[in-house]
Length: 227
Image (tube, rainbow, N blue to C red; front, side):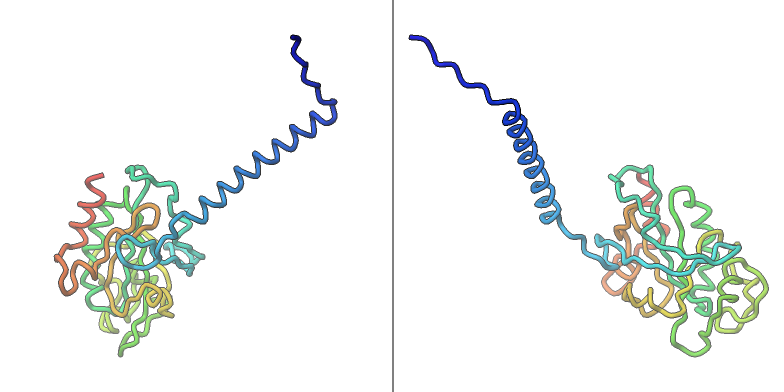
């Protein structure tokens, strides 16, 4: 018995079917993408280790002029754990803080050792305590080690700061907005961030009560040096 031949669709209807199939396929792909985005974990933002560091936009001094700086603009969002991208060392300080004054030499040495693999960023705050009344001129002089009397609680000329001139960005946070965003009340405090902005080390967690006492230099060696 002869088989019945399937009827061929008219040319116009065949094109309509193909178009409809393409639209359905595109719709399914779009739905999968949307569901993937919805189900993707939202990163926690905060100063704790493992969180995405709080972003900030502020004026930055580079040794010649001030310009807008956004921390996250420097992240490598595609970082996959390799050593190709640079890490970050965020250093919160106050030009009138005596501890920050003393740490000037350590910061210079660490930058000399790690600058090829770590982006250094200093956030210059102004703590609400007596003799802590900084200016942009004082921030510039502290960074550059130029003559400006008023550093270290108005006791010293900035040119006498320990260490060498700091060849990295200094952020103006005299308003304390960044400090508050990071949940900080005192200085100095340092953080190490992975290239994608994830907090890898928080000084307060290691050197505070119950911490393991790990120093910044040791943390850089452990996290960055072993990459």
